[in-house]
Image (cartoon, rainbow, N blue to C red):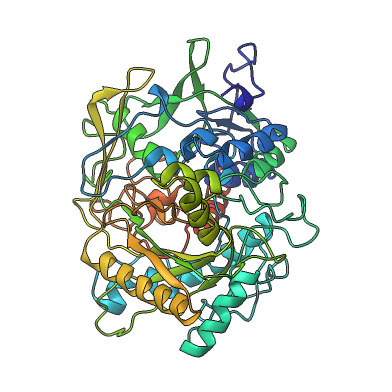
Amino acid sequence: MSTNESTTTMTTDRTPVDGADVCVIGAGPAGAMVAYSLAKRGHDVVILEAGPRFDKEARVDRMKDQLHPTHSDNEIWDMGGERDEYSTSGEHSWPVNQRRVKGVGGTSLHWGSVVPRLYEKDFEMQSRHGIARDWPISYEDLRPYYAQAEQEIGVAGDDETPFFPPREESYPMDPLPLSYSDKLFKQAGEELDITVHSMPMAINTGEYDRNECQGYGTCQFVCPSGGKYSADIHVRKAEQQGATVIDEAPVQRLNHGPAGEEITEAVYKTPDCETHRQTADTFVAAAGAFETPRLLFLSESAEYPNGLANSSGTLGKYFMGHPPAGVIGILPGENTHQDEYGPVVSGGIHQFYEYDNPDDPQRGSVNMFTINVAGPSPATMALQSDAIGDDLLNQVDAQFGSTIGVNMSIEMLPREDNQIGIDRSTTDNHGNPVPDVDITPGEFARKGQEKGLQVGSNLIEEMGGNVVYAKGTQTAEHDGLTPLGKGGYHPLGGTRMGDDPTESVVDPTLKTHDLDNLYISSGGVFVTSGASNPTLTIMALSLKAADHIHEELQA
């Protein structure tokens, strides 16, 4: 799209950096946090990013693309085409390009910015409930890094929110005020003994290092005002500390030395079709849960015939996500937004995160968000409807502005047969096999969806609304209605963490078991999924890994 051009050009210098201490692959939330944490401590850091550096001034144009009824979600941030090819081979067909961005800032450029922590039980599923696996670290191990990440990105939240895990200090900013639609949910919840509360959000409610939220309500997929945190903020901070960013430089493979004990170089391509080799003392693969396993598979060698860092045989396996579900209702004659508008999400329900019977959990945890969206636009409704004339006008008048909804992310269990692999029958623009997603959420997740859908439906009916849509992604597509948000997904696993090198890819510091100088920082290291949005945990883990890398480099 002509309005969505990056600020980079073919003349940009993308040659390797001499004498780099650390090479970070990926400039999303994980890579940005690692790069900044190490650069500010004096290490020479280079970031290799597959996508471009986007022009911040063009974000209003991207918002217009989002609002245009004929543009698909992946078009907003230029995803798609040969560069971004992928395959799906499981029962659950994930729209991969709808849920990721290649560019400086990564997926945080279009995320909803909801940042709850994982719960204590999420780290201890085997020891508490006899299912899945325990993490090799505990909530307490990660707790100080959660606090540090919240301070770094600027989280608005309520310290008194019920049901959340324990905290050690206050959120950096006051919570976002409940919107008018949140208040409708809150009132209905009081009648049903369901607690509706504010959600922790990486959105400004006051002064921080970015603009204050202006309430456009387009956070997912574009924040035109800059009130929402995105990882390009920490990429710029890393550059201010001396880091170098090489954009539009997709890494093709990682090469190791003759003994197979250390990575020696990252081989990357540039838009002028040149191949370059970046050397460094330490490498951090932070390309996300889709692309990181793919890169390791593409880096196979005589020493690692089944993929780099895959002596355990678990690379790509135990892939997970958060199967979404959503409920949409119509409140006849009600303007569900009035003058109290805000970001896409400001309220939520975590009352059903813990299991109904902790001694015998039968369903996935449920993480619910009340949605501040007026429903599909009149133009979108018109394009989707078979009605014409007065019938169409009546349909639009009945739905637009009277729509209310709740989305949710659901916990799924790790299973070996859910995996990220590579599809050798399909290649990208550099001739490399593309990632293949093979995933079936399973019964545990389906029962979690059922619980959330029932809760959401009860709330809307308590308001006097008519539920017109209540489904999860394991069911058929919606019937002529556009969901209020896409919900869930959140790719996790595939390079999981563990103490045992025969059953995991990385250790508790995120260093790979097989290579002394290769770390992985992404949602791929998750052992279990929980139901909380994972980005805060990813950044907390990245800060923890950066501390270890710093110590190693100092030794």
